[in-house]
Image 1: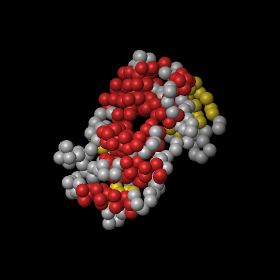
Image 2: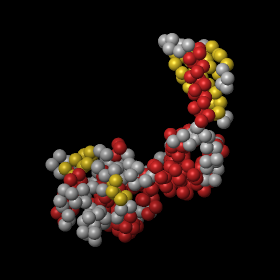
Image 3: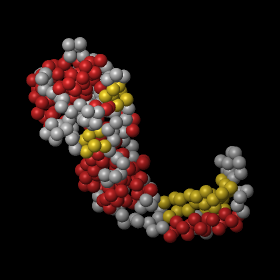
Image 4: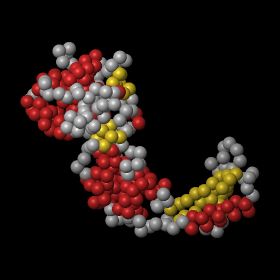
Length: 331
């Protein structure tokens, strides 16, 4: 690609040749050590004098915007929290909680006092290597840190995003294992008669849904006639919100055993109207679902231990249980 250079005051005014169409006037300059570039128009639209005037206006406008070189990471994160992590931000409760946790426990302790201009990609890479986290979790920390800098650029608080150049693999070091059907059956045997814990565990094992999605179900989401389960919301830490991702908002086919299990629970439940929670809390008179953390600690953990499965191992592997998992007809 050919360039015709014409120096103009502070910066360079050039004609950049294009393979298709007329060349274009391009103005390049440096500001606070950052290279900047602006397309002014093509050579048929602008004369040299007109291009020079537009370049001067571009330079004047850029210099009129103060460079917030003293803004620290902590101040940026606070700005981000106020505008992106509030209850009316549109983000689901779980992602908001995750972002706040990463900011407060990883980003701010290390980088909070530094001016934005002192955050460098290589330094962040070196820091990520020292974190005692899995690759996926390190990638999440990078993603959250990068979101803050993208926010800074969008609000014209900073001109660059150093995190964009940070390399961090997401691939797991080891392949995750899942609960085998026999192990899940052993746990279900220990949960026999403990409803609705057994039904919730069964749905988790068979459908491969997130915990918040399961306890966010209402009977209107269960189409017994068409054998379809609709994921429309999530319930996390007492807060009802949308599913974690847009792709999570989906219909799922219900296998016969799941239909049978849900039907059996519906016959026992006191709250069976379409607007009622599938796993409604009687303590709260059905106005909110049960808390899964409490059910897990009180019922599932003892069942796992009684089934002879290591608790920590089962806890990690439940998250990767395939939705194609099938049980013997007796279950």
